[in-house]
Image (tube, rainbow, N blue to C red; front, side, top):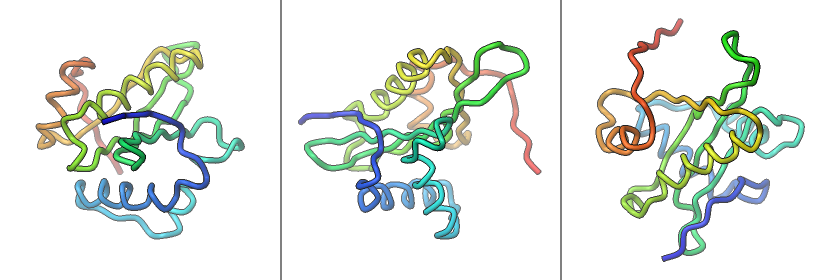
Amino acid sequence: MTLKIRPIETGDKREWVPLWRDYLVFYETSVPDAVQDTTFARLTSPEHPAQNGLLAVQDGQAAGLVHFIYHPHNWRIEPVCYLQDLYVAPEARGCGAGRALIEAVYARADRDGCPSVYWTTQDFNTTARRLYDRIGTLTPFIKYTR
């Protein structure tokens, strides 16, 4: 088994869409096709350098994705990195793809002068949280939305 982490490219849409949709299903949500198409376009466009995406490719097949966004922060001089979406296909779980995707975001953020990386998950996501507890620090913050 070979695992490679690489940037999402414009030709990856056919492989990216099923992973993206399965990720949304996991969180019991969906987005209109226009949002999906715009998200993919931004992730692959040099005109949107704050939005980024990586694919985990296992034995030549897309097995996972991660999307991350750089943004300013009022408590830091440098930007921070929000790891917004992370998904590994069920058949690829347990091979290290999730960890490799997060570590690739850490490396990119460091390279880009952005040492702070954060993300959220739902409390019921116990499998992923076991990984997160090993490679991140749980904070006491509670998220609210409008």
